[in-house]
Image (cartoon, rainbow, N blue to C red; front, side):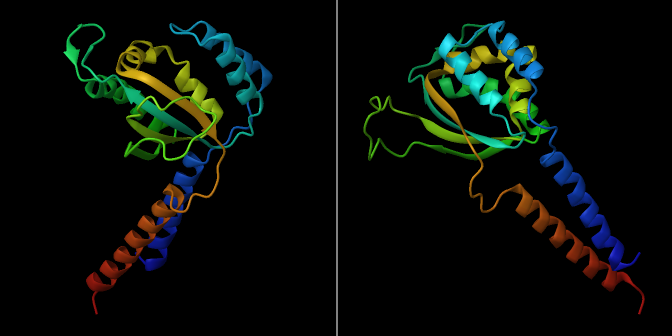
Length: 211
């Protein structure tokens, strides 16, 4: 096998990754939006009228591309009853039972956390907003598309898992953010990783090839 085929294989693998990570099926259609809104309204914990209107406006503005969801979360400070069993457990452990269901499904749709970190202090600057409730952590989640988000949000399989999220969180705030300047995302590190593997493969081929 020549070194050329090693690099061709690396390029092919990156092409497969790129098609999956950046797969676009176009903006949501009016029929799809109506379908997703009906699913939201029929869910076990339906949003109120204001949130439904905000969700519809967000879907109607779909460009078919990726976006990021900024989340602020304050966990319940005291142990909470675990849905189903009623056992008192720390809110962080209860929330993990939700993320244990949600994250694998998110990854399958090329979504992933881009940042998660605990709060390091209170508001250092603020005006025109409500008092800080004492956020526990913040996180930014990448979604491949609004269609992917709605498929996850309206999947009946997450109905039971959603109860853990509600039980664990005392306060939450989430809003979508359009793509901006992302300096070192998966598109870069996957390309660099494959290039490194191709280089190592080429070196190994040179060492093993008879003189």
